[in-house]
Every structure is written in C-alpha cells, then in structure tokens.
Image (cartoon, rainbow, N blue to C red):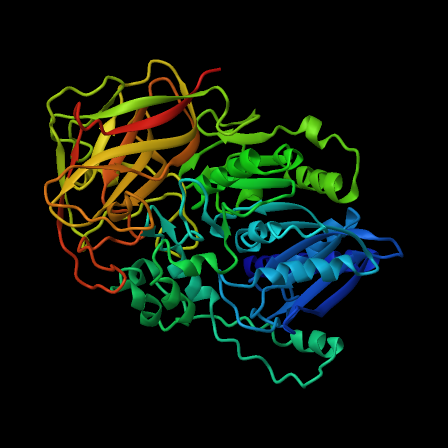
Length: 625
C-alpha cells in the first residue's frame, strides 16, 4: 500500500511538472510570435543565434535584450526547457519583445568565443538589427545577471541611439578598472588572482563539435536540429576543493583535462597587461550615457567594484540627466540570488530575516519609464539606493552610497605583541597607538594556507561555500591575527566602504595581506561580512612591481571592502589579518617570481606593526540617524 501511494505521488508530481511546462508554452503561443534560431548577422559576416518572442499584432514594441554565453536552447535531453519561455512570457505579457542571443562562438552562434574578448561591435550590430525590425519601436533595454550582464557596460559606452537603458545584475566581471579597483573582470583583487574563474572556465569553455548542418540550412532546419542537439557537453565532475590546490596554477585546467586555451592565456596576464584593455571589459575612461538600474549583493564576489561603478557613473557622467538617473539595489544574498530571498533568508548559516523585494515590479516600472515613455511614478516612489542592513534585518534607503549620514570612524590595531588566534591579545581601539611598537608576527606557509570559510564568492564548485559562517574554528590558527573591539554599549550601523591600512615587514620579497571584517555575537559566534587582499608587490600601483627588503616596514593600503551591517548592543567588531584566504584567492608563493609558473613556495615570517609611527588601522563608515 505504501509503495502504491509513493507511485501515485510521483505520477501526480510528473503530471504537475508536465502541466506547468505545457501551461507556459501554451500561454506563450497564445499571445506571442515565437521566432527561434534567427541567425543575426554581424558586420564581419558572423551570425549569432537568436530567439525572439514578441506580442502578436501589428504594433511596434520595445525590446528587452539578453545576450549570454549560457545555453538557452528550448530542448535538452529530449525535453522542453521552460526557463527562457517563462522569462519571455513575463515580458510579452507586459507588452515587450523579449530577445535572447548567444555570444559568438557559443552553441549555435558562429565564430570564436573569448570570455572577455567578444567584440564590442557585436552588441552595437545587434542593436542596429533589432531597432530596424518592423515590429520594433526602436527602444532597447538590457537585462541579465552575471555573464548575461557583464558585457552591458562597455557596449553602453558605444552610445547606440536605440539603447534606452540597462539593468545589470551581479555584473562585476564586466569591470576592468574603476577607481581603487583593478579587477580586470574579477580576475584580480588587489593584484591577487581570484580563483572563481579557474573553476568556472572548466565548466563553461569547451570544444563545440556541432552536428553536420547542411550548408545553407534554413531556420526551419536549425529549429528541428536543436530538438536533438543542444550543443551543451557535460564535463566530468571535478572535486574543485582538491583540484584548485594544483601547482603551478598555469597548469590547473590541463591537470583536470579541461579546454585550456583561454585560461592559459589569461593566467599569464598581469594586472596592467594591455590585453585587458582590448576586449569587452568596461574601464572607467569609457563614458556611460544611459539611465541604469544596478543590482548588487552583499555576498557577491564583486560587491565593492559594483558599488564603485555606480558611484563613478553617477558622479562623472557628462550628462546631468544621466547622472540623475542611476538607481541601485543591494541585497543580502549570494551571487544572482536576489529572487531566492525568503521570509527567513539564510546566507551561509546566518539568518538575515525577510529579505524579499518586489523586483519584477520595479524592473518593469523602470523599463516602462525608459522604453515605453510611460509617465509612471517610478522615480517618485523608488529610493535612489535601496540597501539591506543585516543584523537589524531591514531594507533601508538613501540618496547616495554610502548614506550621507555615514562618517568614517577609525579603529587602531593594538596588542601586547601576541594577537595570534582568537586566544591572543589583539584589540581594536579608537585611541591612537602609543609610541612603543609591540608588533604581531605570524608565519605564512603557502603549502598550508588559511582555508576559505564562507565569504563573498561565486562559481567555485565545492571549493568554497559562500555566505556568512561562524569563523571561531578558523580563528584557532596562529597564522591569523585577531583584533576585536570592546563590547558595544549601543548598536552601530556600518554602511559603506571599509578601508584598511597595515604596516608590514617581512623576510621575503613579496607576500599577500588579507583582511576579513566580522560581527561577533555575545555568545562568541563570529560572522564574516566582507574580505579583501593585497599583493604587496602592487602596493604602489598595478603598473609596476616593487619588492620588499628584509626587515623594512612598508605601508600597505588594501582594496576597500563594503557592507551594511548593524552591530547590535553587546556585539563586537572584529577583523582578521593574515596572508592567505585559499582558494578564494590564489596563494602567493612569496618568491617574488611570476607565481603562476611556480611549484615551490617560500615560508614567510610576516610582522604587522602598530605604533605611533606605524598606525595600522581600519576605517569604518558609521551611520548616525
């Protein structure tokens, strides 16, 4: 009887899934003209595979356009897939044409793919083609998250007359340089390699052996063929936690039998290599001249440069109307996980409360304003910046980022020379340090780096779990210096960029410095908020490498972090200082060599100084309301 009930349950579940699929496709066919596998021509003759969903009738419609390296084929493993159809249905129901296209070299699109090198002209040519269609009203808006967003900024700087707005989400890998950040598409943070693309490229870059498509195949032929071939190879699973340990790092993809051409080209590029400036990356000398609605996440890998780019466009766009039409949402979620927030949103292992937001209503209100010309009340009812404050677990609003009320408060590192681990004597104090220096020393062994535990990450497989995790177990290590404030006598909102300056001496030519910002609960739980790193050879800029002399003290400004967190009464503010956070960031082997082609590291003895002459410190934006 029990077996019969189980069979009945699974039969009903299967029927409900099938019904849901049929419902989406049937609804779409009722209201939309579906035009799939349109091969859109680029100026060099390459054709990009494009699916178009537009309202039935003779009207002219604005276009929501998503270009992606990911597979949006309507069929896979012999079954229809509804994800793209669902998005198309939502757009068509609101009076938009929804157009989705693969980047060149991806799936049915022709040409060669390069993650950061797809020609900017592809976007421009696509805008021209779409705006000239008889069903187009000539207005185009861009929408997408992660790799479906990261091409938007640089293409927007080309100033196509039909591009009305963009809604980039989780877009950090599109940022090459902006202000203090020289990310080069999330490849670097502070000059150290971020290993997310090591893992990501294994799953995404692949040899595409296309079916034997007859020369001159029609659109009908391509649609029929796509039912049987989605062109999405399935790579064998890899234990990334183990694989990312491989040295030298230039051979990482080769070691797991992945397609290595793009990776091996990029892993040898230093932060200021001219090649970063030749592809599709946005750099801050490019002019964005359109309204934009930006979306970022506190636990995303690119949160700080995302916010810096919003500020850059708002403060430096030449057109006052463009400056005045930049809006921002910052959610307390992982990468691209905005709509997964629930009544009890748990990020890692920390609950941040009810973090839901009416995303669709806001996004379509924005599109209605700029693509349809609707005189709606979006700007009257939508705050310029909507940001979620963790700890107090609520949405806040501001006209700027950081909030205008934020004031930088300096905490100085202090100790009796024994700040090693949670059990040491490290402290954070508002009082300036005394004249005598009692520095803290730790040993950094690249073969035994500090493991990444939670954090602001994406795309690393099983190597790193993103989000907030109790760091107490990590803080038992002697290669982590722990500095903690006194117990707070009243609650404090910290919202903005967090700056840190450390004074370092070492017995090696080069090493890294890492900082992690933490909210310490009365019961000892210590939840990470953000983290950063600086490769010391780049402390004077990314256009040169300046190595250390043994025993000499150097000032190192780390790349700023960002958060919004309410430290409740009874909590404490903490930072961790070390020289590794692996595999969130690649290990520095401390040799002063290329690092990417080395297998053997040097153990470093690193010393953090904190005195009147060497005031190591962290500067925190405190919001007074």
